[in-house]
Amino acid sequence: MSLRTLERDAPSLFKNRLPAPTQLAVFCALSLALMVADARLRITAPLRQALATVLYPVQLALLQPLRWISDSADYLEKLETAQRAAHEAEAKITAISLQAHQAQLLAQENRQLRGLLNLRERLPVPAQAAEVVYESPDRYSRRIILDQGQMAGIVPGSPVMDAAGVLGQVVRVQPFTSEVRLLVDRDQAIPTEVSRTGVRGVMYGLASNLTSDTVELRYMPSDSDVQPGDALVTSGLDGIYPPGLPVAVVTAVERQGATAFLRIDSQPLAKMQGTRHVLVLTPRNSVLAAERPIAQELATLSQSNADAKKKARDDKSAQRRATPAAPPGQERQP
Image (tube, rainbow, N blue to C red):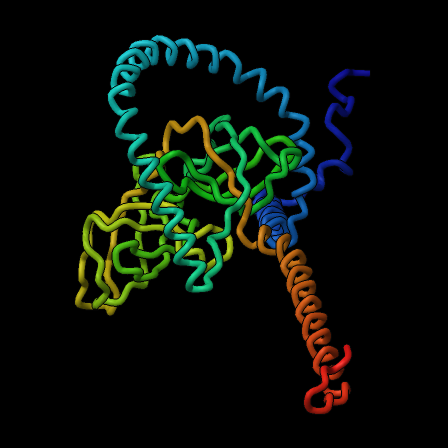
């Protein structure tokens, strides 16, 4: 028998495939369904957390050589700057001491004035330090990764700031890491106010890549008193950011005739690139929720004390009314 007569191809059962356009359409539909399900139902969130936990040691191992090189370069650069800064710091010690004394006096006076006006003190929120591990590789968003996560008590929505001002907000938390959306990201919004006039607005990021660090103050009426150089701080109306945190400085104000709003561009005070150490604040509404039971208990205790004092006064008045009056010239017996 000739070898050419043997069937070398696969059986016809395995040749019946869908046409290539049909396969492409099926796979595209399946991809869109999975993306919609993930965006709406978060079905891949547990898988992401598991992968992040498993890959965390690998990330640390791969980042060690880069850290060594970066630390060596920083050491050589900072050694010279540290010596120069030491001489400058000695000259500023006296001025800083005077400013600290004045700030202490002003804070004491502020507490006294707020007490006279029966106003509540500004809410202090807990904070913890964290280090930036790396920046997100996504070219269409501005995010950074911190070395603290759920194990350190960080929750989604926590404000993040550096030494200069607000840096961003935590949007995703893993067991050992957390993801922060920077202030300049186009999906980030924060309620602010002009510290000079108290005019409130909402600030949005404009950057979708690494080439721009600009934010925009939107929905400001055309007659608003906003000028270049004005400082923008958090208003605290969202219940997340404490009021008074520095955010940005107004760089340009443009009055557009076609709309009833101003175009206001601002420059963030925080360092959007190259930040190593940050401070993660607890959301203000979480602190309020934790302190609300204590405040209610104190109010109940105060009301109970007031009721007890009132009852004692009423009993004493009733006892005095029940005691008969003594005749003239005779002392009343107790």
